[in-house]
Image 1: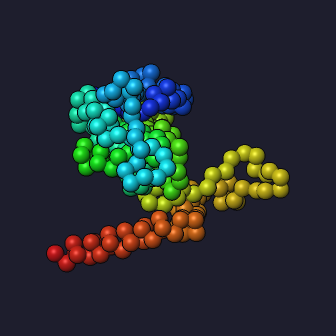
Image 2: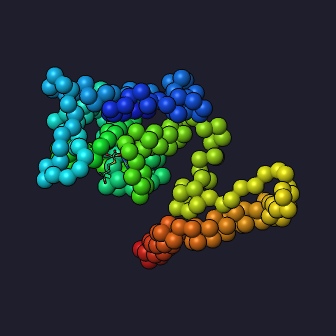
Length: 245
Ligand code: SAH
């Protein structure tokens, strides 16, 4: 069975949007993944189709009602019972490439997109929903976040990316940023390409790339670098423990 995405949203017309073109669009028409965008409003019980209400305790904005959200989630789960349900929220766990890989290896995802002030908190425990953030920024709705998440999963599906190797060397796959790239022209506005990349010496090129990947990660993303170093120390001590056995 191929990867199936169900997106629960007040704006189903935003889908597939950018996922309908290029790599993801081609893969969709080839049946490598499929999408259903579901209107949350269809699950409102009153005749005005109300999906939101004022926040308990007062304050600005409106909150998505838990009963309406639950009905929408139940509908999506019935069609794709094994897919995890993810809610897009800045309060969620930051999305990582490792989580994206896990999701891409599964049956698909059910993605809940918020609007206004967000969701009634009870939906998360009440329906076993995973809260996911796409960064320390505030969007006006969960739809662009859902598009990001799906794009990241789709490019990893079997047969979607051209060269099989192009996924493995990418940033974050080994906990580091990727090395920088260059192409022709060799000289542009007085700027050259690092000499080593034109040397044809593959071992030297590989060494340069590894070192730039490490240096750039250390300087640009000290958080990633620290985690990478911790993981290396841990795996080294794991090796020593094995030798002692
Ligand atoms: N009141 C909320 C923000 C609501 S923004 C807060 O301060 O935490 C409206 C909707 O946009 C959210 O419900 C969520 O679905 C989406 N959204 C905004 N920023 C996001 C982010 N960084 N990651 C994922 N979804 C986000």
